[in-house]
Image 1 (tube, helix red, strand yellow):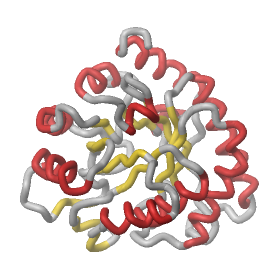
Image 2 (image 1 turned 90 degrees about the horizontal axis):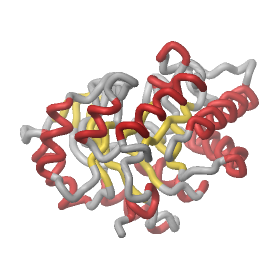
Image 3 (image 1 turned 60 degrees about the vertical axis):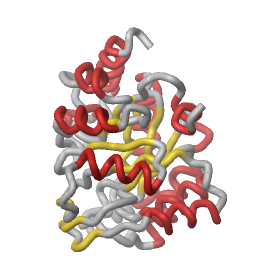
Image 4 (image 1 turned 180 degrees about the vertical axis):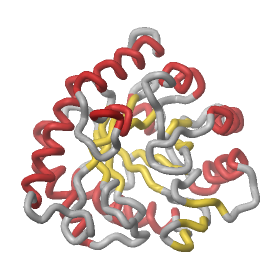
Length: 270
């Protein structure tokens, strides 16, 4: 059994985002609401997602804009605090993603006992944050030293807010990353958060990685979940489950339930 299967089972998982509010020290942080407000919102979102029947949840700091490639230690600590307070309420596998810092992501996984992580671990990109060149070898070794070597690693191979400086095609980059950097799954994204990955990109990557899980990472919607799961081995979803489909809004329990009803139908009732 692969590590991906150990975490998610044999089916095609729907991994739902718990987007934390902007954390202390970031420009959009709500100082009046403070950490209590972030925790309250995350508690409500987690409850709604689990009630809808999602297969896993992932905690991320999507609203810590402008984004950084090396995240302030305070952000990682704040995320650990929130997840620690929620641990007794989490009933599904959970993962973490500290945007856009693989080292911080591995540290957070070790601190919280996360089952999986998502990040940009490989490649070189021109991005809104400047030149982006993560080091998968360093991040994975760091995780091992911290006792998080067993977490499932989900590699996003088509970075949002960025363009690859590698002249190779997306399928070639994905295939190479699997060989050189041993991810447990590969993720295919759209250009920005909430924007869908192209179906042809999903198909092309899956074609060259028939034995590696390939997931849609962004922009999966109610109208597209069946088609996405026909091609991909699962998906990560955030914006589509929010009030009005707004990335920065709270999770809408009805939208989340409807999405999961459609996902289960697409998976044959699972």
